[in-house]
Length: 147
Image (cartoon, rainbow, N blue to C red):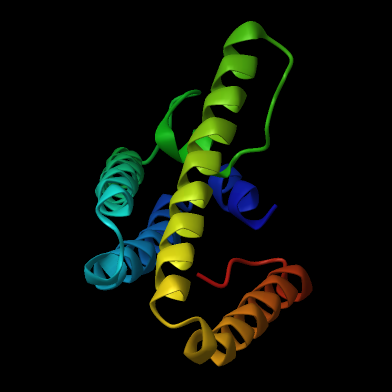
């Protein structure tokens, strides 16, 4: 809701800055984990980094223009899923598919890191779960992105 409200108030640079911060963190995490992952996972990491760079470039382009077309990257990334028309259904399915693939990449990275040292990774897993839980709680409590 917060991103949509910013979009409606033409706060494009606020949106672009938040999303760029989030996606930069994603790229950094993936790049740092690459040496510790299997070769197939490394290809997925490269795909995911390119995917995040393309999204970042798109939101910056929208911010520079000070508008985002109906199917512009900024609207596609932060808007609700819509199923009223065929193009909206296709865009929503595409968004869900890309997000599912990106989530799968993270699952493979986590799997590969866990395989390195299952016993030593357990405290890390619990800490990571706590961070994710706190992140979700902060998002819900503040109704704002914590990126």
